[in-house]
Amino acid sequence: MKELRIAAIVVGAAVFLCLLVAFIPRWVILGIRGDSEPQLTYRLVLPDGYVGWVRVDFGVDSAPEVFKRDRYREVAEIKIAEDGRARTSDLEVYLSPKTEYEFFYDAKGSLRPVDEDLVSHEMEAGGISARADDYNQPVKPHSWYFFVGPESYRARHPNDEFLRSGAPLPTPGRISPEMR
Image (cartoon, rainbow, N blue to C red):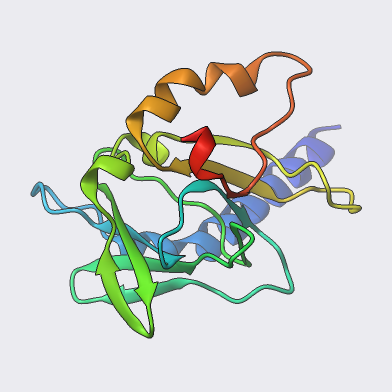
């Protein structure tokens, strides 16, 4: 019995060390520092003039990686398709308060900042996180939904509207000018 308990402890320690080693590169890259400079930036590149809900699916094996090293910080440049969606094989990372959000429109190949009145710089860009609802696999990817558009729309459609039990998640895509 004592040998079995020792074997279980050794196996548990080995599993813990393997998991620790698997995550060390991300910890080293992000490097928790004491200053107030953001260490993680989500650079969101939207189709020109985009106003609407966005959905980013994280942990999709067949999708590209988005995290890149940019001097002193990790930058995840996520290009949103015309349908308001993006996918990445990376996992979502959030380092409060060291996470920053940058919003750009792709205007004919050059980046133009999105008007500050159309975006939220709150945690998760003022959005919500949920498990993807339309994947046919045992572990569904983690999805991040956020809105790019006027504050008046966000006030009429607060996040708790989508967080109630049984409520549908936001539908990604542009919204019509009448809905703004």
